[in-house]
Length: 65
Image 1 (cartoon, helix red, strand yellow):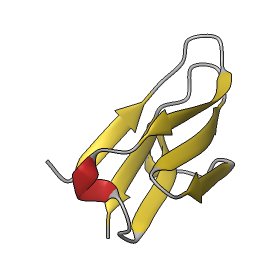
Image 2: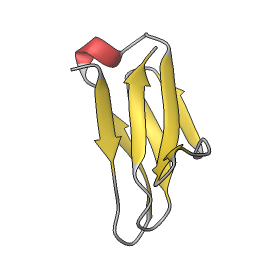
Image 3: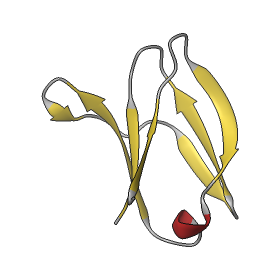
């Protein structure tokens, strides 16, 4: 659909290739908490990839704007 969920049990800092439908489009990137949206995690988009730093046990949502 129009969003991707990322999660790491122990935390990570790595790069992924974005799906074609997400490439070159404005994205909203934020953590998810019990109360809804949380802070924006450290991330960087470079061409067709996203480098995302995930904190342990903190889900992140990457959504098309």
